[in-house]
Amino acid sequence: MKVLIASGAGGGTAKGRIGKYFHLKEFSKSLEKIGVDCKLVHEFDYITGFPSKSPKGWFSKKKFYDLINEYDPDVVFVDWQSHFGLETIKAGIPLFVLLRGNLWMEVESAKKTIYKDLKTRTVLNLRLKNAERVLGNCQGIFTADFLHDTIKERFPNVNCHHFLEGLDASRWYPASGMKLQHPCVGLLVDSNMWHKSKEMLVLDEVIRAMPTTHFYWVGDGQYKDKILSVLEKHSNFYYLGSLEYPDKVREYLTEIDVYALPTGMDTLPLSCKEAMVMQNPVIATNVGGIPEMVYDNKTGFLINEGDHDKWIEKLSLLINDKELSQKIGNEAQRFVIEKFNWDVVAKRFVNVVESYLRENPTEKVEKNS
Image 1 (cartoon, one colour):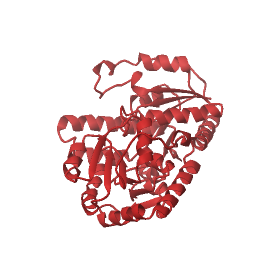
Image 2 (image 1 turned 90 degrees about the vertical axis):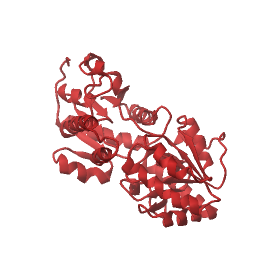
Image 3 (image 1 turned 30 degrees about the horizontal axis):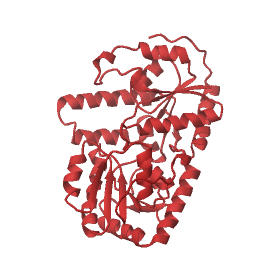
Image 4 (image 1 turned 90 degrees about the horizontal axis):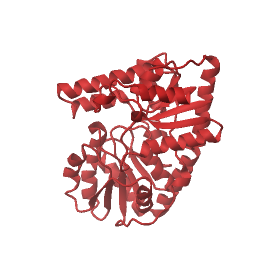
């Protein structure tokens, strides 16, 4: 079986935003280990389409079809619901889609914040329309459990498959090099969606109430300045910007005492998994897919939105009780290694795809632009 994987999703806390491509590369290696022929590409190297920031690519599809005819995939797997997926559907190739978050909630949030004028809203609506065409006509959507009902409401005939994006635990080991002040709490999250990022402001009261604890933030995003205008007034808060991935991120996760994820919307964030596999005790907001990985009082602590008192309580508990902190960190690492193993994820993916191909045999024909 030949699987063409196209990476197009942006975001992520890594400098250069390579994190999502990095993890799809790990996924492709796990597929290859079980005999699957894989090819991983950057989606926008082959097709962009309208609307995009590159008008030259709006009408050119030659690179895409050259790739398809040369590689001749049995299926295509994408993590961005755009023109690569649309052309795959037109070409008659089975398409499977990775949906990392609640697309519709993200769009509504964007309309209320940064996409307020007619031009940007028009672009946003066109992108959503393209995404829904991809999702509504694909052969299957891989996503977190909490999104299944949302997807089925919109696309009742599309199959949803449980997908826990994995990681290679062997890449995440203690690494020296970064020196922080202790005790410290580390955040590793971008601020690209206000509905998600505004929960970081709960830390205003938390940082004030814990003057001897140092809070570090790694990340970037269009709401960075809005967040910093509130948090940087505290002398025990430090903004580190983006870090080189994975080496500097590894050093950062080695050095922090507690990993914090205050968020108003999230699925199964990679940075949280990376923190957990590095044996960091985790405290996170109880939203979205986070409860699928942070089990309250076992692999971390869950906090309701806006509850700064609970943040203070749980952070103080972990900082002062080293034995409990180590116990939760060990349990978190064990959980991630067992549940988010790429080899397990790859086998489940292959089972789904092979089952589809057996039930829907097709004759390959040459694809033309």
